[in-house]
Length: 305
Ligand SMILES: [Fe+2]
Image (tube, rainbow, N blue to C red; front, side, top):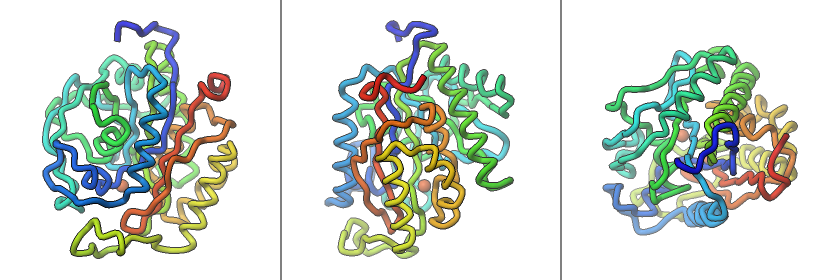
């Protein structure tokens, strides 16, 4: 962290980086106990393209917002130096038993908590080193940066969308994104942001005998597929404001995992970018719609003002 200059931090890139554990399972990393023969190649190759694209950047830290760290009271932020344990997906323990060992950027985490609180948000630093990190955080971070050579900061998904409605949830996530951006700038970090959610999220309820049998994988429902293509087209054409205007309807019509706030948080942190995003892949996992999408400010004039 010696190269960081307080006040001169920036978000170097943001990525929609969905977390189906199937993708880690199919990669066969040494940290994961189950092994696979193959599977979900288009999405995994999309992550390969994302990783290659990110090679041009010097990155200090990864900040990830995960749908599977759910907090009832406020936005929580990982804020202990080191976390090490076994993460087991509660739905797919046959696919994901991952031994993680990660570092956390505590100074940045505390800065995000402080900036969020200053903006009137309910914030909480998670300082318990025995806290078990959720599989959404782990999966997105692993697929974006499998070397685990950078510290991370993870942010929870609070229940505002569920307790109030999608509009109120989105408004809070935009505020949380802006607070995250201010913390990055003040601490001088060069940060990669990951929004960990899938798009459409209706899914099959029965698993094939061989999970990676791709003859069983397909779009669950044409309507949700059409919604995914529409939202992806808005990303590709830089129409983030329209995307956010339609987000509440998308969440309801496609049962989208955007209801956890990750994508809206990231778009808020990026300053509602009007430049085109790059879509590296789209594919289904148990029928859900997943896109690997990159927003790269440096290729479009250095980012929003
Ligand atoms: Fe999920």
